[in-house]
Length: 308
Image 1 (cartoon, rainbow, N blue to C red):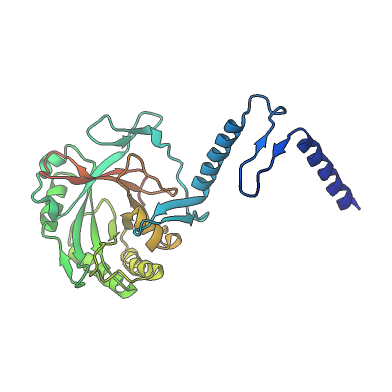
Image 2 (image 1 turned 120 degrees about the horizontal axis):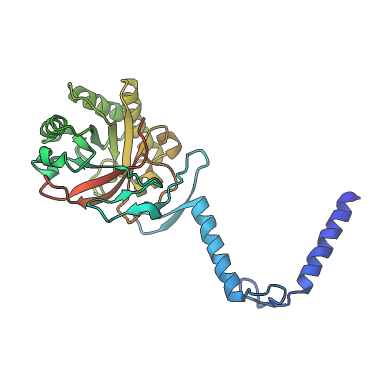
């Protein structure tokens, strides 16, 4: 009986509310006009604008919206199990030599670069006066033949950076297609570290080479993830700090993020500000930075949070 009375009461309230608003109904899915005499100061245009704004807020809070490599817009549900960031990117500052994020107390984040043989010879003495850290490519696996190769400038870059006081980490460009190949890549990296003292993690670099001959082309999301986990778990088991790097598209479509986010994340997106809901330790914001001591373009990064 109480439930029946409650339903009747709700119906009466709804009827009373609707009696103050007259509408012309034009058919299913079509717009209608509503009297706003009971809502002073609100026009239909204002209400429509507010509705659209609320929809955008809902979508941004609930989904990663991203265009895949076929040009199709996809919606990926945001996981409640991964920490979301609370940064305010209106605090990004482009007025200096490099982009940076300014905290409320006026302090800024650490800025760094990542380099490989593609930068040629580097004047690390000069570079050391401008950056707070550097990641050096140790090596890579070929995307078509699967061979593992040491970066031609690995030794020069590690020696030069460390001698001039630049804190360093290393990264490896992976094209592993199985968990076991991920383990193989990690063991290769560990074997090449020698006595170099790392201040930053060993980074797994996973990317889609966008080549027809790429051996990773037909992998499932689970296979991509397992290849990554083979590397990351092996580095961690060796007592080293492991980290994963890739871009927005690869994170969104090729990796199980609830597994990957057990490790620090380095996020690449070349934009005025990053569009990603989750926390990330480093943001790579440009591939065309200019740093004294390096003759050509170089990747630029901001360290957004401490790396464990």
